[in-house]
Length: 382
Ligand SMILES: [Zn+2]
Image 1 (cartoon, rainbow, N blue to C red):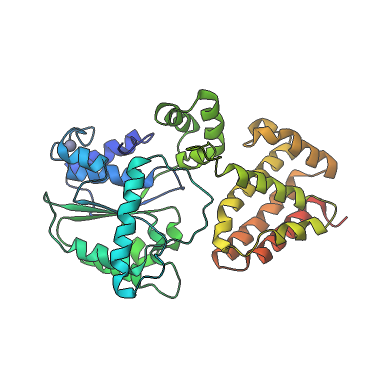
Image 2: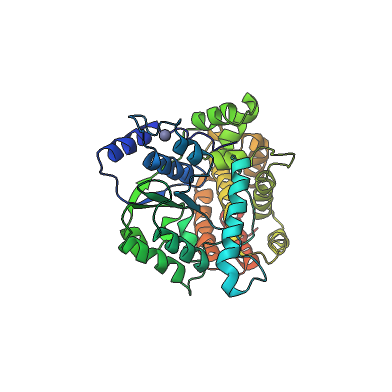
C-alpha cells in the first residue's frame, strides 16, 4: 500500500512545480483550507517534489527510489508530524521517545490504510512540546540521503494545545526564524486563525479550497472503489471534502462515523422546533461532559440541517444537502409555519455557540443556550 494520489487541484500542482523549477518556492509554507480537502496530502506531494532528483513539468517523476519511498511514507528526509494523543503514564524524560514511537505506529497505520474518514473521535490530541523538540533536533541534523529535508506539520494550530503553554509553538517559531539551510517546513491548518500570528507571518500562505463535488465523487469511485450511487450520495454530504465524504461511508465493517452525528444534528433540530420547551433541556443533558471542542463536527452538521430548513422555508428544496430529510424538513416548516428570515436569525446562535465551544465552556450549557436560541427564532414562545 502507498499514499492515494492527490486529486482535483492539477493547476495548483502545476504552478508549484513551476515555482520549484524556477527556485522561487519559499522554504516555509502554510497550506490552509477546509478539513479533508487534501492539505496534508498536498504537503506530502510537495515533499516528494522537493526530494525527487528527476522532476519534470508535471512534478515528481513518480518512479525513482525517492518518489517510491515518499509515497510509501518511508523517505528518510520527509518527516511528517501530526497531532496524536499524549501517551499516558510516561515519565517526562521519556515522553519525546514515546511520542516518536506513537508517530511511527500511526505512520504504519496510515500506510496500510491511506483513506482515513473524518470521524467524530473526541480523544484529545496535540502537537506537544516533546514533539516540537524532536522536530527541532531533527531539523538541525544533516539530511540522510539528499541535499535537503522536508517537514510536514499537519494541523499546526494544535501546536498550542493549551492557551497557557505556547512553548511548542515557540520552538517552531525559532525554527522558522532561523531555518537550517536546505530545510523546508510545510504547515497545514484548517483553522489558521488559531495559529500564533508570528507563525502565520513567517510562512507563505497557500489556500486549498474545497473540491468540486464531481471530483470528490470521481475520487471515491476511482480510488476508493465505492459504487456510483454511494459515491454520489457521500460526495453530496461531503461538501467538497474527501475526508468528510469518507465519513459518510462504511469502512472496514464499521458503520459510517459521521452518519450517527448527522442523525444527532436532526434530533437537535427536532428539539429546537418542539412546542414542549422541555425537549431542549432533555437534549442538552444528553451531551454529557465531553470536551466542548468536540462539539464542532456536530455544529457543522447542524448548520447544514438549518441551511436545509432555510431552503425548505424559501421553497427552494431542490438545493438540499440532506435530500433524504426533505419530508421531515417540510413537516417542521408546515407544522410551525417557519419563515426563512427566522432561520437566518437562528444561525447567529450557532456562531455564538461555536465561539463558546472554542473557549471550553461546559457543553451542556452551550447546547441549552444554542437550542433555546434557535427555538425562540423558529417558533417564538408558544
Ligand atoms: Zn522521482
